[in-house]
Length: 352
Image 1 (cartoon, rainbow, N blue to C red):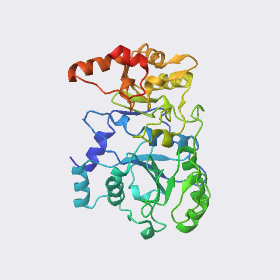
Image 2 (cartoon, rainbow, N blue to C red):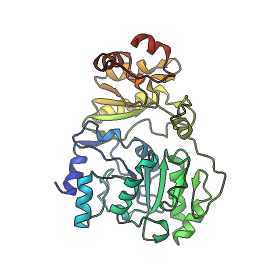
Image 3 (cartoon, helix red, strand yellow):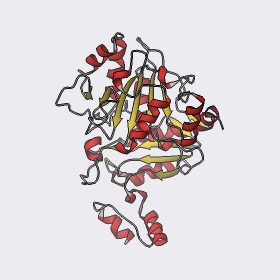
Image 4 (cartoon, rainbow, N blue to C red):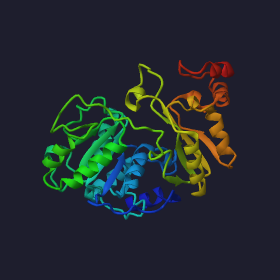
């Protein structure tokens, strides 16, 4: 299979929710958002499970009129193929866009979950034909914007990226796009202007202290779910942030205080996804079982989904979010089950 065939299969059976390409804004910018995680075509996980973070940013940018597309790091075999044939990484060609080489973007925003993904981040740059070190890039190269769970310590990779987003990325990326469009001169001038944006760290123009940006997730302009239906699967985001402060996890630090999407917004998104062909909904949250909104619980959301004839699955980071029956089956099969120490007492009682 060639790299083009791989991309074709990756986007096969994919439907876009509200499939209208954005109007070209004043100071048009091609913005490409990338994830270091490799989607599996036929594997255990659906494509939709991976890009929910960058997709949320992409939807916000498209509301403002910025054309956006996505790319992913391909599997190992295709990385070797790209290097042997001197081909470069391409976009998926979504939202009415044609596929273009990633290096042709004005802005390349990359999401990283942890520093273990550093080799993948560098591979993504290398396969795109973009110089690894920021000092070697010119005005012809994209502005490399990095974000995700690694922002609490932006220094280790400061020689490789141009801008680090501190906190939530929607409004910050929009400001970066606007600033880049207004400063079409030298790369140095762009970075100098971007350094004044709240919620960014620019290694070439360091300043401090920098406060993270936390968006009001209850506002409907911030995505309540994915813009993609792949293989009948779509994602709905229940909440951001975390109410816990576990020593082994930085989710609370990175995501900010626990905030939930109002139930009416979730239902509108679910209906929209259903009309686009979704048959299975992935519920995304740090702790899905903790969802509460004006007396509504996770069970109420699940009932809304199942009443529409769709399946429900959980992408929660915490095992108790899968429900007590799932945990009972797991415990029976494995002879044991692990539950977060702060799990609701009701979960412990039902399982044990």
